[in-house]
Length: 205
View 1 (cartoon, rainbow, N blue to C red):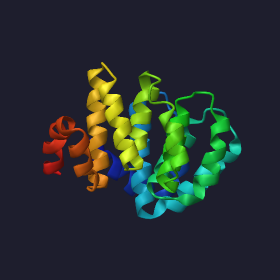
View 2: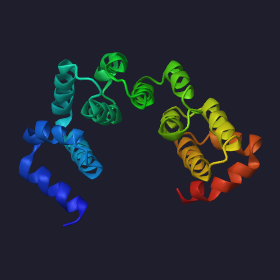
View 3: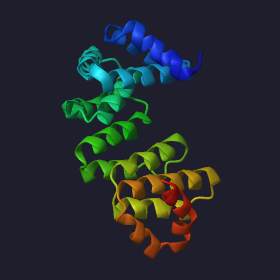
């Protein structure tokens, strides 16, 4: 049974009543288990489980547990569903995490929901921190397609010696341009070489 079949089987057999138990899997040490649980919850939420997910999110928030990774996953899912009700919770979640990798993720979700540049400014502070923080911040800022983000990504591309970071930057530029095609001529004008590197991906899309 492949991954998609397994997800569908769980959803059909368990339904939304299983959401609390599936949420518990988000805190498992095994990454594959966490990712599978997230995928299941995303599909459930897209169907008729959004309200259940929000209630579970509030329940987890009220537990006030430090570094609750399940809460981060739920926030990400609900932000993707444009659930603006979580905004005040997200703003308070910063105080519940000691692992700084959570900060740009929380700001990313706030940026998705509000499109407020102040959250982009917070994300920008992590772009030169190296390691996971750097990668998270690069991906996070793509949620606000703008000339400012294009400039940030170009600067990162030019000032890094890491091939993996450059590849991530190019992928992020593609995402930004696909979200706002008016930025395509802007990139072509200021950085024709970089524009050429990703032109085939834009044409394919």
